[in-house]
Length: 136
Image 1 (tube, rainbow, N blue to C red):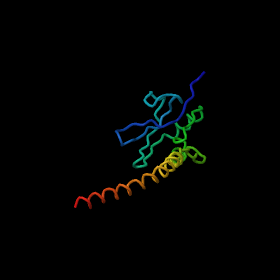
Image 2: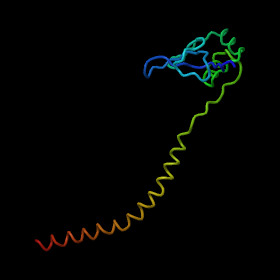
Image 3: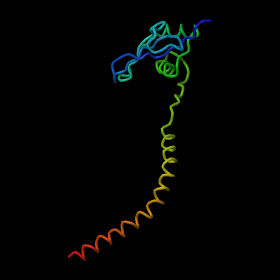
């Protein structure tokens, strides 16, 4: 059984300064695993892309499937014909909704606790004011 090959981006560069190599590697390989072949590079800051179009088309014919990001990059460069694939990103709104659900019962509990507490300081203020008047 032959390994599944993928055209993917391999990160290189310093911290906070990423640049990527466009490589052919095994689908399940880790990021630092040696690639089968280096096809080009991509710099996200300058949006500069260099791709060997002949080798990409060769590997696609051999059965290598590009990842979603690599596919979109190759479509943008005109190496592969087709439309860009929408990248599914998890929504941060779901976390906010969960926090609101957790906060709602806490607010109800705070409201029930605030009513008796708000009466107690008024009584303490009257009690504090009375001894001061008597002491003078």
